[in-house]
Length: 165
Image: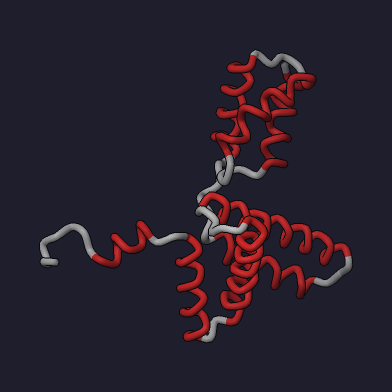
């Protein structure tokens, strides 16, 4: 490969590297550098991915791996809530740090305005006019926001918009 090429081995490799491979490579790097937080967090995430692969009987696609990472983030958010209620602020802080590591592998989440715009569009598409139509709207919008918006957040936005109708 010559120096004038726009394509470098590293760039090309990263574009086609699976998310699982990226996590495994970054785990190795965390072990080498002694980054205990990243090492611990990535080990737990990779274990969850491997367990899901065993259950399914085949390797997971990146979209399924993103779903697992999102579940891990959600689980840790619940842990933070429980730790805060129990007065265990050190656990809440450590868990918050783990969330930061996991979120670095997730796509950017929709902001409130983007989510509301998508919800309004879905409401118009299904002709929803009351909270009773929430199921129809959610069925349409959830596949569109998978991986980029939390289901609880989507549900709340849709509910608020339908109640305003």
